[in-house]
Length: 145
Image 1 (tube, rainbow, N blue to C red):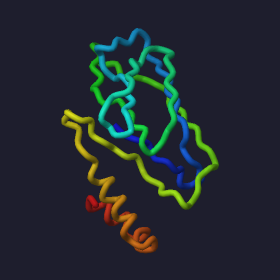
Image 2 (tube, rainbow, N blue to C red; image 1 turned 90 degrees about the vertical axis):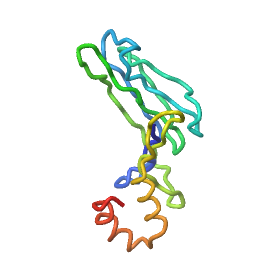
Image 3 (cartoon, rainbow, N blue to C red; image 1 turned 135 degrees about the horizontal axis):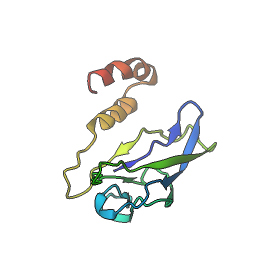
């Protein structure tokens, strides 16, 4: 499960909405691939949407809007779950806010893993002076930090 990045770095615009439209004909729930939305604390699943043809899911994107497709797709003929994804941005970003990349969180009671690479990168960004972070971010990521 994840919360999407909050800033488009080049355009300096804030990600606000996600829209998904599903394209598979005759999809069955037992084939997996359902889209899930979880609460802000990642304790409870709030909603689940089977990816049936022409279904649209639209939701607000924030630093604590955890969502994803955690269950494996198991279509009998190996067909993938197909969708169109669209994103809405606004020019409301303030440099007083902290930007972040996609934030991954494990679901409780599952074998999901914490994404320690993202955690380490955020720590380096917070601790290092900006000039050092710009110089060291690439080399650090190549060695797994």
